[in-house]
Structures are given as structure tokens and as C-alpha cells.
Length: 391
Ligand code: SAH
Image (tube, rainbow, N blue to C red; front, side):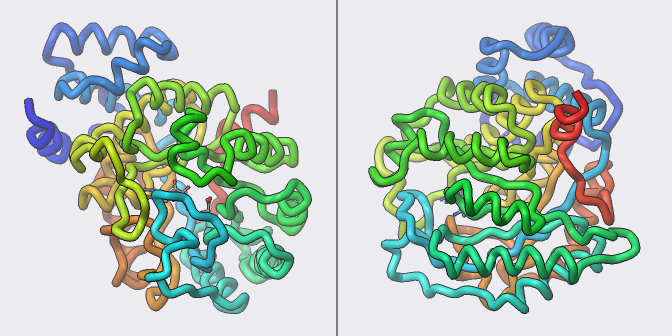
């Protein structure tokens, strides 16, 4: 069966939360039994990632959805994504806003606009926001973020959210002191992707000044400080193998992270990648990304997993498919449309012209279309974090 045929079958499949799949083939039936018997081992994870058989994919999808419903419930948690600056001191080879890209116009939002955007999210009942930007480590930047966190925490208080919206940061590698300052100011979740858990692949994606070891050290430091910690990888990178991806999922487990944000790698015209070997076609990358979501859900069970915007860049229904494969977080775009185009990490970024209001309406329909509902006025913390702190 071609990938295209598989994709169409997924789209047609009705949402049936709570209903187990009825596998057709004997092999798919055998896989269903393996998945029902407990947490997948390395061989099963590899099998999940390798299959392109439609029956097996439905078995995987259904098992991941059941695991999600059992451990996290049927709600989708929203984080309004505020991309407040594309200024960056790093030169990641895959990224459209890398330092060396002179073709991109640089911007930074003022404090007031960041806070107003967060307020809009609070009023909409989003419950949480993400502050994301290119990477900077200067004192002025650190202070802007500290001031923004403090102001957002006080300015977004409502009767439903007496402590203001939850704040996730996605601001790259920083010193432990900076991470502490932001935590003390009121941020409580941090997303720092590994990009790949393979040290050699990491090295192929970044200039020598960035290291795999430094990134792992940052993740450990964030965890020690008390943040809910998220990581993730890009899927379908040039040179990435299925075994690398299995290692990535096992690495999430080893690190004990609370949240996962991962998506397909999408080439950017002005980036240095792709090189050799050629990038997998879009359908294969999307399918691989969905299988990664399912594998992670089946292994880690109670973590939050995002259906990322990059999924939607590859398919109109990419995020909904992510939800059906076990994701439970969506990050609606709330970056002011006037600067949104300048924050293009990869080509084909969706929703460039929609305003935040349009995104909100469109999203609710998309979420309901797959039988799930939005968790409103709630930080939507990771059940894994809550469970590990109760243990
Ligand atoms: N500088 C911050 C946040 C911005 S980048 C940080 O490093 O955390 C956010 C994420 O976008 C990256 O972690 C990366 O995984 C993803 N990204 C960047 N370029 C991409 C591309 N070409 N395709 C897919 N994802 C990409």
C-alpha cells in the first residue's frame, strides 16, 4: 500500500474515542495483543516506527489513544504561543532564523505587547502561554523575560485563574542562574528540545560551539530547579535512522521528562540543511511523526505531548491527526500577525495570515472534530509531573 493511500484512510477514519480498533490482518491482531500486554520494549517500539501497513497503523493509533484517555483524560490543553523575537545568537543548520541568515528581518516585541498578548490568551480561557524566541543570553534579554513573566503573572489574574496563566518558556540553553531567575519570577514549565538524542546527529545539525552534553546538562538543571521539563526531537532529519528515533523515545524515558514537543523536520530555503542524503517525502515524514507520538504515548503514558504546528505544515489536518495518535496539547498561534512571517523556522508554516481570534475559532472546531474537548481556564499541567511529585 502506498503512503498516500494510508494517509487518505486515516483522514476518513471517524473519531471513535473509547472504542477499540478491530484489526483486520493476523499480523495486526498480533501487534494489538503485544501493545495490550504492557509497556512496549525496544523491539516493539522499532516495529511501531517501521510499519506502513494500514491495519497496523490503526492498531497503533487506537492503542495510543486508549492509553492517553486512560492516563490523561480526553481534554486538550492549549498554550498560546508568543514568538516574541527572532533575534538569535546561534547558528543551528536547520533553522530559518539562524544567526547567519541575513535575508530575514529581525524583530523583538516590546514588553507591553507581550503582556497584552498573554492577557488576550487569559481572557480566551487558554490557561497557559509559551514564550518562545531565538536564543540570546545577554542581561537585557534576561531582564526582559523576567519582567514579562512577572507582569504576565499579575496582569492575567481572573476569578477562574487566580494565579494568572501558566507560563512555559522555550528560550534555549541558559545558565542555571538565569533558569532560576525565571522560575522565581513565575515560569513553571520549560521546553528545550534535544533535536536528536544521538550525539553524532546532534553534531551534524549544529556548529561546534553547541554540544549534546551541554543540552543534556541544561535539561537536568531545569529539572533540579523544579520546572516541568519538556524536550523533543525533529523527525525525518537527513541521516536519521529508525534506530536513532527508537533511542530518542528511550532517551525521553531515561531523562524522566514531563512533556514532549516534537515534529517533522521541514527544510527551510535559507538554512544549511538539507544536505545528503535527501529528505524523506512529506507523507513519509508525517507518518513517521505520528508514529513517534504514538510510540512516546505508549511508552511514557502520562506525559503531555504536543501536536505541533509543523505537523500542520505537512498536512491540513496534521494537528488533528497528532491528537488522534496520542497528543494532548496544542499551541495556538498568537504571535501578532505583523511579525509572524519573520518567525519562519521552516518553509510552509501554516496560519500566517489568520489573526488570533480566527485561530481560536478554527482550533476549537478541529479539536471537537476528533472527539476531544478543550480544557479551559486551567494550566493543564503534565500528569506525569503531578504523579512524580506525589510519589
Ligand atoms: N531558540 C529556542 C526556540 C526556537 S526553535 C530553542 O532552541 O529552544 C524551536 C524549535 O523549532 C527547535 O527546537 C526545533 O526543533 C524546531 N525547528 C527549527 N527549525 C526547524 C525545521 N527546519 N524543521 C522543523 N522544526 C524546526
